[in-house]
Image 1 (spheres, one colour):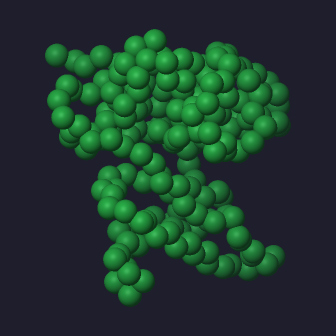
Image 2: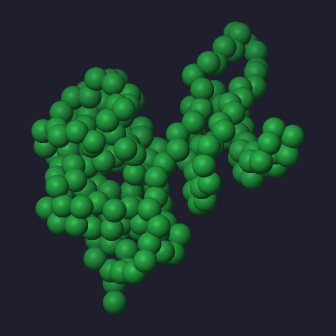
Length: 204
């Protein structure tokens, strides 16, 4: 039979013409759930969204955001400007007990000439009962980017993971100036092998 799903549904928000906003939607779970899939249908005004578990109590509802990311957020799901889905490997899931506060951060960008009113929905699927592995997120990258006018450049970032992990998905992210992106993995800097390439890069 179809498995149960639970929607994270934000309140409606407005984005004036030509403006950018950061909003956070917080809601508290009323029951235990183990999630093995997230689904998101893109909205034109949403540049990206981030669903996290709050590590400290916060007020439920919609609030203006003042930072890109808080250290008190434990990320669960990230989506860019397009449709997105994340499914855990068999036997793995995100454990979310009753009382967990989920924060959905919205980066909103209205490039039109009229105010846009919208809302966001992320659907979580409950995983099948049984033994399961817990899932987390690593975030890596760099903001140390210096490209002279009318020039091209290459930016590299190295991330060393200090414990055994199984990586099953990743979300590459650049903006419109990016032209290609690759991911290499290995046990040392001398044994790196290409695991992913998107060339040409397409932000959309």
